[in-house]
Image 1: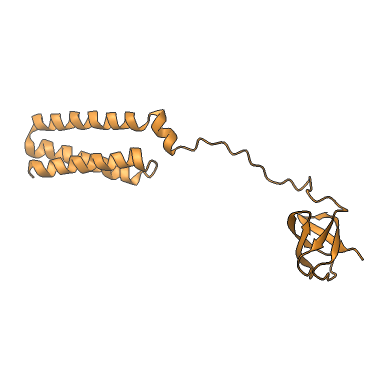
Image 2: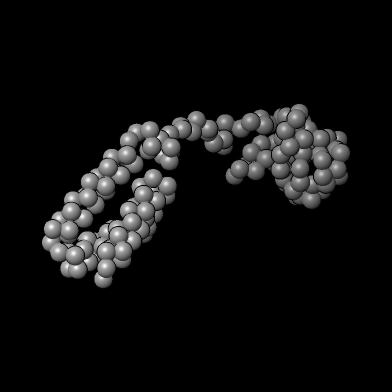
Length: 155
């Protein structure tokens, strides 16, 4: 093998490692391919170009990889790809209903026995205890049973 092949192996190995560390961290496959190309380039360098050139390639590759890892793992670069935001959202707790019993609303769809009701400005999916309620009728909340809002028609 000539020096061009060794140089291309090292160049592509470093390019794959750059892609792994800086652009797409965490994929591992790209990094392993880059590491394999570097090892193959260094091995061919020792075999075909002599031990002095092999030592130069090994030390140059070690310095390049060390510099790459240092630059890639700096906090500024990690914060670009790391999750740094805190999620303060909360899930609605069924033990604290947002539509208390006794609240009245207007049926937007026919309740047969399930449908949609408008409470103030909130659309909710509700069910009845089996009766059918026409659209536009006024309904009252009886309670919340197993995550379902149960309503009845107000006559």
